[in-house]
Image (cartoon, rainbow, N blue to C red; front, side, top):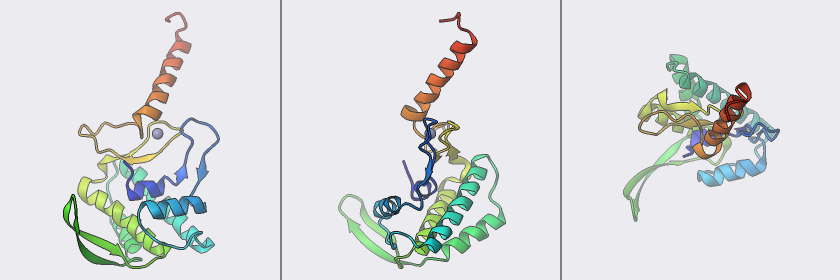
Amino acid sequence: MDRLWTDFVNSDYHDWRGGDRSEDRLGKKEWQQRFLDEWEMSAPVPASPEDERTLRNFRNELQLLAIRLSAGDSLMDKDLEWLNAMMSEGQVTRRLNSEIDEGLKLSLIPVWAHWQQVVAEVAADFANTLVKGGGGRIRICDNSDCRWIFYDDTRSRTQKYCDDKMCGNLMKVRRFRAKKKVDPQKE
Ligand SMILES: [Zn+2]
């Protein structure tokens, strides 16, 4: 399942079928609006060129950090400093709500409706992932065309593909074909 921060980093979209539909969706106003709606945040759409630059720099840094952690690297002091700096760009207030199915819920409500606040929210969500599960469950989809970043919440911690039905099946078919090529007699 997508999280706020994985949805954000995956705005750098790669065509998982290996076609030419890869694109950086961050600058597209349709992506921006969908992202804000999905995660119940507000900011001006389209983002100004300056905001877009800020968002992209942040996204690329976060992507690199996620890739590093997925490879087994540990979190360094400079990563913490960076995350803290990104989170300091947004403020939150607290609200206690009573939800019909879930009972009482304490929420952090973003104060500002601008993209810096969004950066802070994404950084905080990533920080929460590190707090709750460590960086060891961050994965990059094993399909080299896809490279979708996701969080492995399977019990066995062995999820290799962003989606077994899509990338998992595609790779199975590719392995099968590669095998057939090597040994055409065996069929
Ligand atoms: Zn994938």
